[in-house]
Image (cartoon, rainbow, N blue to C red; front, top):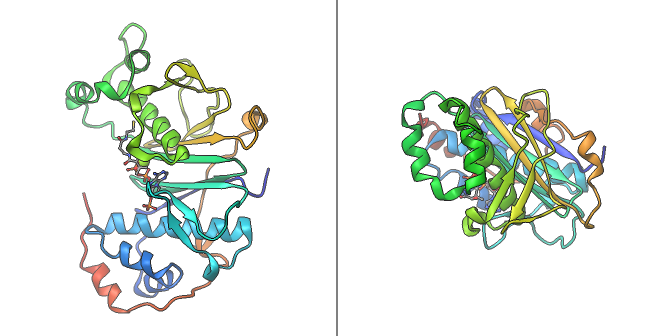
Length: 286
Ligand code: COA
Ligand code: MG
């Protein structure tokens, strides 16, 4: 497997930093990032954003051998994280956070996008109403997949399929870097209805169409991180019609511990110690 092939996930919900730990990691990110992150109202959002930065820096340090202090992360005009001052870094990376996890996918591809979605399947009462509001996001064929061939799937199963398609669409628009600028109903995903995503399996036979045209070069990997989180990775090759060969042996997401996340990390910034008090003043979003 290529050294630039990375699939990581980190459990932000379980991470309860102590004072020293929190101030230490803030020293390992850029000043502008410290400021942005400390503005989050809720602690969960703050932790997600902070861990996202640490995953990005770890990945760039590992793949490109750039010291932490020299990594300059910026954003495209659509908000996509980019590596400043390096024109062709030979690989692409993307992060996502939702529910308990923050995830990163990086690969030796021209475009990489990823998304994680928490499968909140408990409140099935409002599903018909919710689907009605979301009608336009998916096309007819996708609704057929969500609802099942004979409309025979229960609401929990329908919602799981709905969120699976959502996750795929997000991974695709994020690989393109366009964010919500893309008209989502133009994108159609075709999933094999006989396959259900599980923790032990990575589904790679999903196809994407834009304006009814099959985009043959795109590849998707879908898996469950646990019973309530699904993840998708969208990949577009550097050279068309190549790089499909990995489909038989797709990489699994690796759960990182906090120690693994911090391995080889080098603090390079100062930190104002009052940021700990500010962190403590924030509440958890339920
Ligand atoms: N392209 C690629 N990646 C982007 C991006 C862009 N234009 N803008 C931001 N990102 C990255 C960032 O790293 C960001 O995290 P950070 O700010 O902590 O660095 C991360 O993606 C956010 O992704 P995720 O956690 O999955 O958030 P999201 O799913 O709420 O939003 C967006 C992803 C911002 C790219 C955008 O697609 C969006 O707002 N989507 C939600 C709305 C929607 O209609 N979805 C329908 C899907 S069917
Ligand atoms: Mg998302």
